[in-house]
Each structure stands twice: as C-alpha cells, then as structure tokens.
Image (tube, rainbow, N blue to C red; front, top):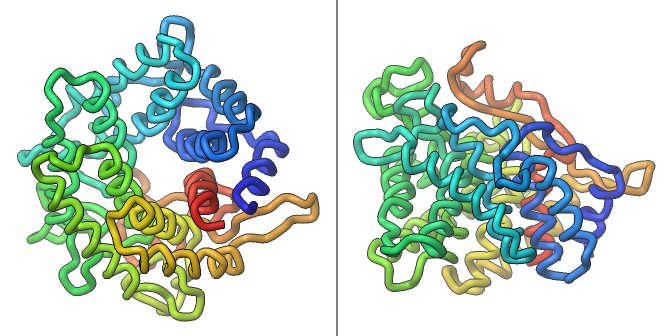
Length: 357
C-alpha cells in the first residue's frame, strides 16, 4: 500500500515538525491519524500523540500559540485534538479545543461574516483559511454547542464562493479583499488575479470535510452540495491533458513557466474521491480519481537512494501582500520555490492513498 509505504518512510526519517504550533504539522498528523483509523497499528497513534504532546501540557495550554494573533492557520493543528481525545479520553485535549474555539468566537470578520485570514490582513479572505478553520468549527458545534446551528460554517463557504468565483472557468480565485484596496486586488471585485492550485485544493478538502460533519437536514447544506458539484466539474475540465493532474496556476494550462503541481493536485484528488465515496458525487467521479491517482504517482512520486518515497514539485508557499509584497501575479506564483515532501502535500497524499491506492 503506497500510503503506508510513504507514511512509514516519513516516520523512519524522523521528519521534524515545525517547532511551533503550525498548520503544516496538522496536515501531516491528520494523515497519520487516518493511517491508524485504516490499519489500527499502534505506531501511528503513538506518533501523533508524541508529536502533539510537545505542545499540549497537562492543563491543556498550547505552547507557542497566541490567540491575539487571530490567525486562522493556527486552528488547523487543533483538528487533531478531537481525534486524540477520542483515542485517549484525556480531558486536557478538550481544554485546548476550547482555547482555539475562543479564537473563532472573537475572530475579526468582514461585513458579511467571513473570517479575516489573519488579523494582520484586515478584510482579506483566502481560500486557505476555510480549510484551516471551518471543519474545526463544524466539529465543535457537533460536539459541544447547545444549539446545533451550522449557519456560520455554511456562510464561510457560500459567501467565499460568491466573492472569489471566476465566472469564465467556474473555479475560485485565491482570495478576496473586502476593501478592494490591496495591490493584488481587482479594484471593482476585490478578487486576486489567479486560480492557484493549492488554494482550490484547500477549499475542496474543507468543503467535503464539513459536509461529512454537518447533518443532512441542516439549512443551507444543499447549497454546499451544489457548490461541490459545480467545482468538481470545473476542476475536471481544468486538468492538464498530459498528466491528468492540475497546474500551479490552474487557468493557464501549459503557458510558459507553469507546471503540474503536486499539493493542489493531490488535494483535489483526495477531496473528489472522498466526496464520491460518501455519496456527495456520483460514483463515476470516484472511478475518475481511481484512474488519476496512478498518474499522480507517476508524475510526482520517486523512490530515493535511501529507499524512501519522495513527493516532488510541491509549491513551498504562496500568499498575498505582506513584506516583501506578494503581488499574486502569474510570475509570482510560478517563481515560488518548489519543495519535496512538504507536509501540506504529505497529509493529503496519505489520505488519498488510503482511498485510492
């Protein structure tokens, strides 16, 4: 099983997590948790617990986490806490969950109720942020809320979809600026210029994850299913014919400098496959991803001289604004350095491999 081969290799190499509470840690650990769920091998649970306990003390306090940053990225690693509590029954994990939820209670929002990606980016909504925070919030409501009102979660997807939709391709632009004042923002729509592959992957994975949590009779859930169907169809049309995967800048195909990118591709594959397996899409979509997954491995997966599997051609990082200023231009996205075995890709690869490998 390729997912096991890869996960075991990552553990054998003693890959170091980020030394601070960080969304990338969450990506890998969620993949390892899925390995335990699938195979029941104790080493995966031990690994996740060991890595998380670096940050969580006996009082449930989270080392290096600062609520006052109001950064959606910092919520993602918290998804692992629900799973760890279910496996161990240790109350300290729920105390940590309460802390992270308090951030979302107080988190700054746009006029239509969308979370700022970060406090330092006022008025900005990035697709990345939906993956970081919305499944966590939906799970919190499912477990702990007295009134099971998922409207705030559903709002994040519906309004972000409307604000970022590229009507020409049916895909979503990377971000939206409520004030339309950022240098990267269209002065009329507030949209960023391009459809970044991994941003689409973040949105799709988040959407399928919350659909799994939100009950079928929740008001507004049907519209999430409509969004899922529309995006799945648009993504299949946007694939690179040569590799069957997706490009770094999705709407530009084989334009000079553009390249098939691993993390966005595997996130889309994992999301569509999971959606079909859960019945949110027709089974033909699952079979399409079943055929696509080997093409992904052929394009991106290599065995190195130590005998471990590597995933190549992963965009290391891409954002907007800040200092030095990231313009969101085509040239910006294709010039960002590529990495190997980036956790943002690794976790999604493990999950996809368990479904399709």
